[in-house]
Image 1 (spheres, rainbow, N blue to C red):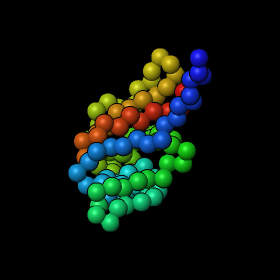
Image 2: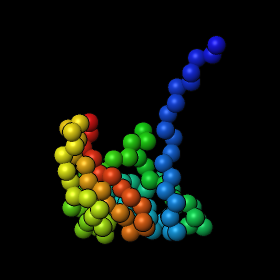
Image 3: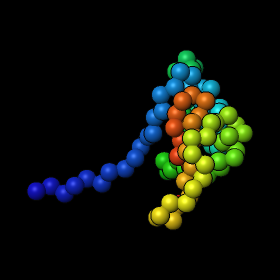
Image 4: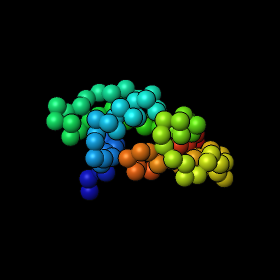
Length: 98
């Protein structure tokens, strides 16, 4: 019997109509750093370090153009969570660490 391989998350891909515009939005709204935009504009990457992508700035997200789906609320597990939708239609969960 072979051992189970260790799995890791390599990418989170969000499909949008304008990747360069979405990357610019996430840079401004959440302070992420741009890493790469394809010359054709069909692909863009943000530098998230070791594939950690977390947001915790609800008011900043709204000011940047996100719409509120659920304001910050405390969950039973001790986490504070809110939900917004970015201008490209993507649902984003904003959560404090567990």
